[in-house]
Length: 331
Ligand SMILES: Cc1cc2nc3c(=O)[nH]c(=O)nc-3n(C[C@H](O)[C@H](O)[C@H](O)COP(=O)(O)OP(=O)(O)OC[C@H]3O[C@@H](n4cnc5c(N)ncnc54)[C@H](O)[C@@H]3O)c2cc1C
Image 1 (cartoon, rainbow, N blue to C red):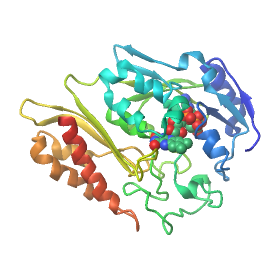
Image 2: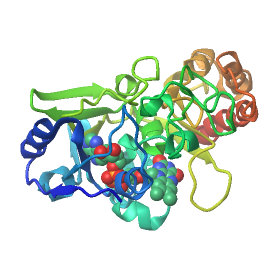
Image 3: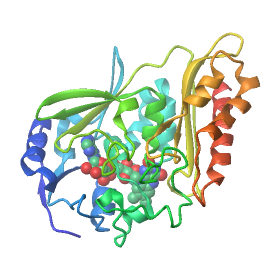
Image 4: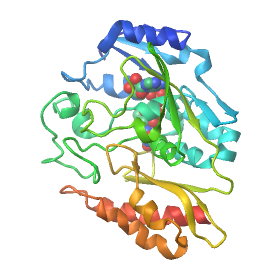
């Protein structure tokens, strides 16, 4: 493990000030399950990705944790553990989709200290990115090893330059719930909808989102879903113990009295460098009877999928999982 200095700020402004002061050498940590246990212990580094020398602990900031309700929906502090998200009565009552998605993350032990902010901002699990010997685009190199290598878990949609899939289960659910992230930095606070938070390799191959190096995610805001909204989550893994999604589907939608899709979202994990909104599926459902249309609507995902040499199997998986998840939500 590379040596580092640990800072324990007691306010967001102090933490953001430290990030600003130390620049590229500093990183925030919450539970540490990815930054310390993964990236740093595995020496995941390159010229575009120096390992941090200053670590700023966010868990020493008292008001960054907990679930609160307000007129604009639920607010979840960034350092709230995944277990506390899952167990929150407010989350279970108003947005059970998030509770279900968080419950499929990792193992109980990791969920007890891994946080929502850390889960959303964790780095990709691509084995070339994580491998010490591969100087890929994401680390400042000039090649994506998945193009010629073992790409069975890589992107089937939106891969360009780099073919990672976004690893966060909660991010896929939060995108379906039309959530936003509150960010705080030296130049002030801003709110970014999850629709705009994540970006693909074309926008910036070194990062997965718009968080600036001197900013902190302070909370996630989830608007109260429409009355009677249907929602469901499903995740397919290679094995039944803890694992990242091979593919996952989250959906939130409203239905009229005749069983027709009114409005809503279908989002996918494990298929793209970002949590992916399957608008082709949503558009095919709009105003149509869900029972009668879902099969053809789910098949629309084939029109945007561009598989690599070893991952075409994901297209069938995700098509089937979209159909299953929408019907499950419908009840
Ligand atoms: C064995 C194992 C299995 C896993 N399985 C899954 C899985 O199935 N699904 C899944 O989604 N995840 C999985 N994970 C990832 C795990 O869920 C996340 O690592 C955990 O939720 C991250 O939370 P953390 O607080 O420990 O993050 P940390 O390691 O503390 O931080 C992760 C990253 O986020 C940044 N960060 C943290 N908090 C903030 C913040 N508030 N603002 C800005 N940046 C921040 C850090 O700088 C770091 O880059 C797994 C991890 C392991 C080790």
